[in-house]
Length: 107
Image (cartoon, rainbow, N blue to C red):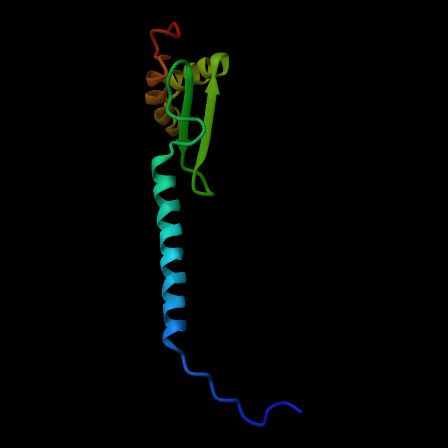
């Protein structure tokens, strides 16, 4: 048969309090370390340069990443400088950083 009444809780000792504080401190340190790592690490693609274009665009899921190099990057930049839509306007500065401005693309 289950307990007729709830048994009384055991008192929290000083040792228990220290253990909970230590666990909390470790958790805060881990979360701070992850936050610093995420803020400092640029990601696997890095910034646009040397013929590679990296563009971050707003999307329905928060953000989309476009990364192109070589001929694909040149085609992306040609389209960006020929169009006036929002994606093209966001892509143009990254094309310039990659050295793929309109002068280099023949436009």
